[in-house]
Length: 81
Image (cartoon, helix red, strand yellow):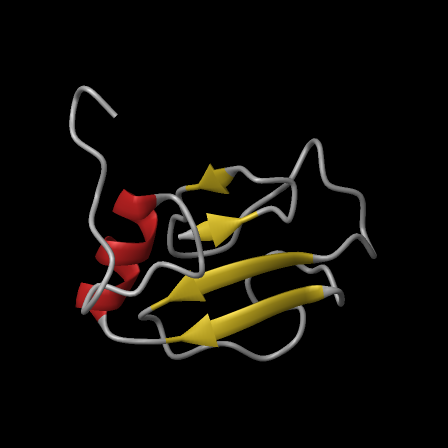
């Protein structure tokens, strides 16, 4: 899961991500269950913050659409908001 720092989530494909709307040096966040979280590995951007977590938490955060989602206490909105 990739968070671009502008309130948008992007899905991540193993092997790297090429941003077209995030300039090199612009801060963004990647949450992944893949164990390669060092600078520049995922998108060649030194300003990317990459966090490794469980596959379950990656799915929970991407489904919620926000990084501050707590699956233990927060609820997902239903079809009616």
